[in-house]
Structures are given as C-alpha cells and as structure tokens.
Length: 396
Image (cartoon, rainbow, N blue to C red; front, side, top):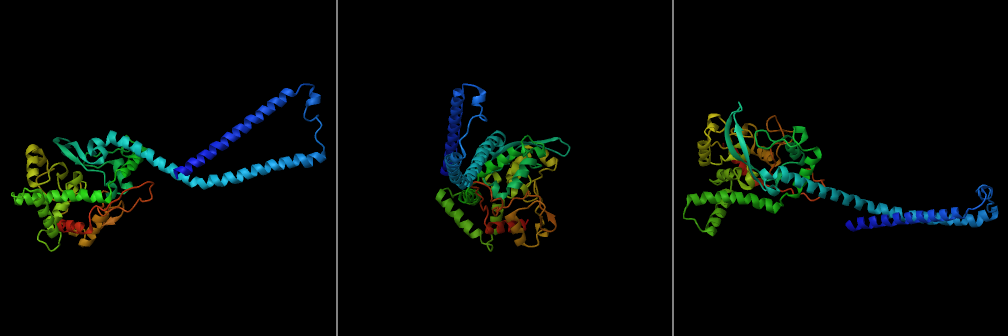
C-alpha cells in the first residue's frame, strides 16, 4: 500500500513537471515570436496577416492538430485509470496516517492529564482523593486506586469510554475532561485519547495472564496463611494449582470462596474486580476486614459520617448493594449474561432497570470493530468464572 501510494505520488510529480516544462517552453516561444515582430501593426496584426489556404489548412494543419489531440487523449487515457486504480490505496494510507497522528496526540494528552493517576501507558496507579460528607465537611484524605486502562476497551465500548471522559465518574477522583461535561478537552482531543487507548490494549494472552496473577496472588496468600510452613515457591504454586482446580467445581465446598476471590481480584489496580464498585471503600483501601479496621482507625470520621462503617462485601459503593440481587435477576443465567455484556445506555436489564453504560462487560466487547488499525479486545473472564462470581453475589 505504501509502495502504491509512493508510485502514485511519483506519477503526479512527473505530470506536474511536464506541465510546467510545457508552460515554460510555450512562454519562451511566445516571447521570441513577439521579439521578432518589428514593423507596422497593419502588416503584423494577426487579422491582416495572410493565413494558409484551404488546401493546406484541411491537410497539413488539420492533421497536425489531430495528431496532437490523439497524443493528449492517449496520455489522459493512460494516466486517469492509473490514478483511480491507486486511489483506494492512497485513501487507506491516508486513514492509517490519520490514526497514527491521533495516537501520538492522544498519547501526549494522556501523559499530560491522565498518567498521574492511571500510570504511564495506562498500567494503573493511585490518585490522592479528599472525601467529604454531604455537608462538604472534610472526612478523609485517601489514596484511590486508579484502574489500569490496558483492557478498558474490552470492558466498555468506545462510546461508553467517550462518555466517561466527557462527564467523569461521580463519587470518584475521575473528573469530567470533555467540554460537554465542563472539562478542558475539545471533542477532537477526547477522540484522540480514545484512539490512543486502542493502541495500549493488551492481547488476549496478556489480559488473561494479568487476571490470573491476581487470582493466584490472593489464593497464595490464603494458603500460606493457613499453613505458615509453606515457604518454598514451588510448593506454594503446587498448592495454589490444586486449590484452584478443586474450588472451580460448583460442587466444591470452596466454590463460593473461589467466587469471592474472583470478585475481589486486585490485579491491574482492581480493574478486573467487582468489589471496587460494589464494596464500600474497596477502591481506597478497605480490601479486607483488617485493612478496613486500619483505615477507620486512621480516619474515624469515615464511620461517623456513614461513608464507611466496616467491612461490608458487596454492600454498595459506586455501584449498587448486591444484597438481594436475586430479586433483580430471576435466574443465575440472566445475571451471568449481564456480567458478561455489561449495561448499555437506555437498554433494560434485570427487572425493569435501565442501563447507564457504567457497568462494564467482562465477557469481551464485540462492538466498534470497524475502526481503523488493530484494536485488541479480550475476553476478560471465562463463562465459568462469571458463574462463580454470580454464585458468590447471590450468597450475600
């Protein structure tokens, strides 16, 4: 494609040079003819100069004009098809070049405004966040986990990401960046950010490995706490493998615990966990009973204001309380399908609820695939993992 575009550009330059040379030659000849005109206007005026007779006009002069017309027609007949044959490649390369320029500009905008929270390259980070009560009084200064964005287009559609960039996330450190929400970025700059995000999405293998790392870290901590004698790395890994193999069976006594591990997955700064939205304080440190107690000891006004009163898995945070979720989804299958696809703006789900687009889909997005360039969209959780999460949520 690049070769075709280069050839077309070369043909265009050659034609332009030929036209310019022809123009210069014409001007030179006209200038020389004009210099030779010395004498009376009566003798030199074109309408007073004897022209060729009809016999010569209709033979030699006419043949010469027709010959040049044939040459011109032949040139046009060759050049125009060549131009149009190469036009699709030129347009495709222009579009790819446009994407490349948007990626570069979006990357600069990301590093200037987003990397301080989400980390360089969108790998995740922390954001300082001041929590206030409903009256605006200071409650706590916490470090809010800013999720990795390297799988964000597997969880949300590009339209949903654009909406989040435009209007922010209420109740979190994520501000409105786009002009529609009162932010500083133009519509084109937001689009450039989305194009940049396409370029940093993880492959399926990398996304799966990232999620598995969080699962294994949680199970590893659990098995070593249960058996402090497990210190050898290989022995720990073997114990983790055995536990996961058994716990993933719906008939296992550890099945709900397996679902809880998936629900609380801390990999990629909680980007792959349900708890960051559904467990109070999880996104700023309340990740366990002990961690929650430490947080409340440091910031007692969290409990006084009712913002965080203790370790309450699934009790609702940015997302709703999951207690009694079976009342909204009559079957586990319907709930699993919702977790797989996420919510869509204006589309109903559960029992007469309307989607806002805020709930991500963990089964892999399939929309917006007609964009230019390579965009990785991965399946984040397997159907079996989603079923385990559903079983845990319905037990709350």
